[in-house]
Image (tube, rainbow, N blue to C red):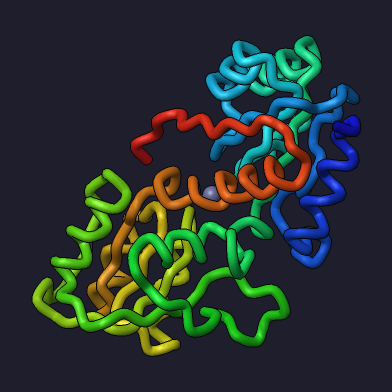
Length: 254
Ligand SMILES: [Zn+2]
C-alpha cells in the first residue's frame, strides 16, 4: 500500500465532490493538517470533541466530517472549546477534512441523494434549477398520505420527525428535500409546486410558513438527515485507497 497523505486524500475528495465550485460558509477540504500518513479514518457528522476522542481511542490519523470548523462569522481565537478540539487533533497527529455544501449536493452520494433513496423518493430536479451547483432537490413519490410519510421517516431514520401539517390525510406526490438547516427553503419548495418539504431542523417561523404556504413540513433532524453523505464518502475513500474507515455516530437529538 502506498502512503496516503492528508493532501492526497483531500485532493481526491475535492475532485470527487467538485468542492471548489461551491461558495460555502466554511473552507471545504483539509482544515487541520497533522502531516501524518493515513491508514485509519474516522467519519462523522460533526467534528465535536466526542468524535475526536473516539478517533484518538481508535488510533486514527484523520477525521472526515460534514460539519468542520472556521465558519463565517465565528470568533477566530483557538481558545476554550475550539482550542481544546484543535489541540487534541494536533497532539494526536490527526488531520481534519470537512465538506459542507459539496457533500449536501453531490448527485450520487450527497446527503440529499442518500436521504431521498432511503425514503424511496425519486429526485427529479433541483429546488434552485438556475444555480450552477444547486443544493436542495425536488423529488416525486407514488402517492402517500402525509401522516404515512411521517411514519416512513420515523422508521427509516429511527427518529420521529416534527410534522407540521394542515391536512395529514392529503396525498403527497411531489416533495422538496434539503437536509440540515434548510428550513427556509420551504418557500422555494412552494414556488416549485411541492406539496411538502423535508429538512433537518425547524425554526419558530417554519410553523407559520408551512401553514400559510399550505406546504407540509417535515423536520427529520439535522444530524439524522446528514449522516448519509459522509458515510458514503468514507466508503468510497476506503475502496479507493484501501484504508480502514469507520463511521462513528455521536448521538444528537437535534
Ligand atoms: Zn448541516
